[in-house]
Amino acid sequence: MRVVIAPDKFKGSLTAVEAASAIGEGVRDVLPDAEVVEYPVADGGEGTLDVLLAAGGKRVDLRVTGPLSEQVDAWYVVLDGTAYLESARACGIEYVQPSPEVSLAAHTYGVGELVAHALAGGARRIVLTVGGTASTDGGSGMLRALGAMLFDTDDRPFEFGGGPLGAVAAVDLSAVREQLGDVVVRVATDVTNPLLGPDGAAAVFGPQKGASPREVEQLEASLRAWARALERAGTIALGDVPSAGAGGGVSGGAMAALNATAESGFELVVELTGVADALPGADLAITGEGSLDEQSLAGKAPAGIAALARQHDVDVLAIAGRVALTDDDLAAAGIAGSRALIDHAPSLEHAQREAYPLLREQSAELVRQWLVARG
Image (cartoon, rainbow, N blue to C red; front, side):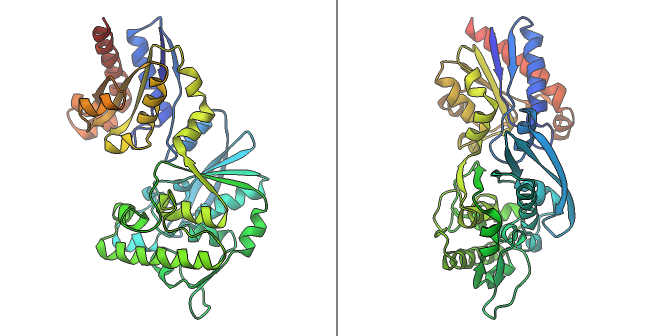
């Protein structure tokens, strides 16, 4: 029997690499003679670099400016001549305590420092993964770190962050374009939200970063002013472009000023890890993540693995910290069975603290159930 293990991270508890290891041990407890292969995956959000590192990448460490201008430790991965940068390593929401004030002040300057470092190191291709950021500044901080000049109506520069961005009237991108040259930039994301509107960066993701309705309105106005300034500088019109709102709009800033193309973060990781090539001929695939919910069905790793497995008639099971989907929802996504760690722990804190042994134990139980159902 051949089993493919392909989970995403269990946020706050386990990396995708650790989760794959725990699930693999659980499978071997039940099927000691099975061929078990582990392919930790990601969807372009936090944890993507851990997966790329496990795939053979080289880690590059540096200090950059954090979302509130403090210094933070960050790193990126170089694999096969491409620099993979994760925006959350520089301006992740874990660096702040979300609040209305933070939602307006947080910025992406450190992301630009990551890009500049990769360019100085000779990178000719850059992949920027977005998601999990504390900022809603449309990538303006990132571009300022790369030499962009932003001005208000009196030709004066102003503070960083999504709040102050509302004063932007003009932007000069000449230094950015000169530094970038012919380097190819790709943006990897797990969402398709536009920059503006009810499905945009401010409306959908602003509240997660501490924005009340008042701050959401202010950030929306700021992003609208930013999009107009970019368009006047000769870039594409960003407002309705799919995925431009990812990462608080850092995706849109990259698409406009760095000529980046947006693509599925999951598909990118699948391409690099080779998990798609491992599925043909397998008897079972097991995926999972911290929370298996409606978002999991919209571009996240579990649904992606299930779709790939279905092409090869491979049974799929899912295990998660919690499962907020019905059996019908799971079946429609091609998932034959699931199990939630929280259902077998006395508390959420216990489930998070003991995630590794719980994941091993419940993975074994999930496989036993599958074997019984399979006859």
